Length: 140
Image 1 (cartoon, helix red, strand yellow):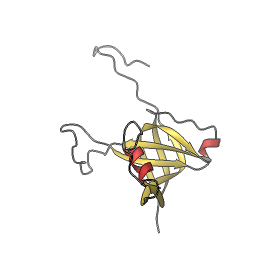
Image 2 (tube, rainbow, N blue to C red; image 1 turned 90 degrees about the horizontal axis):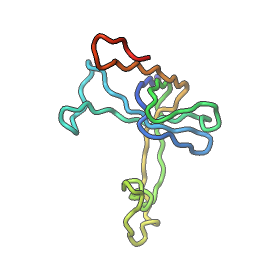
Image 3 (cartoon, one colour; image 1 turned 60 degrees about the vertical axis):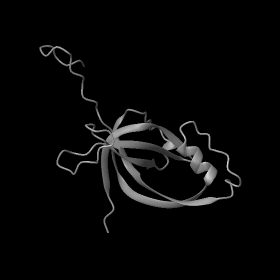
Image 4 (cartoon, rainbow, N blue to C red; image 1 turned 180 degrees about the vertical axis):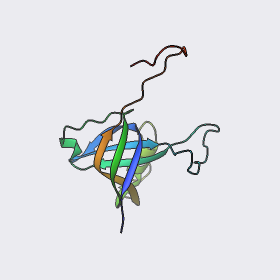
């Protein structure tokens, strides 16, 4: 069976580390010949988001920063885990504070995640910005 992924996009969230692995979230915009993603904000092109896991990346020389444009080669991986209601609600709130429910730590939720496990990550060159006046060359 074939399980290969190539995705190109912009790192949308500051990378984080867990154990020896590096993680980051990529925003990937669809090509014009692909079906459009439904508009959340009318008239705005919405990206697809996918988490990328770089095995051993937390201990390597690799650096990744929010805003970097990357091309990732790898494979899809799904995994299941349990999470308490307190943890789930804490992540769902922007300030990280979960509402206080009695026994929320004891209530466990089965969760699943789909991610790309990176075999290779290539940082793409960002095209130079064009100057405001049409006659001037692009800034390098």
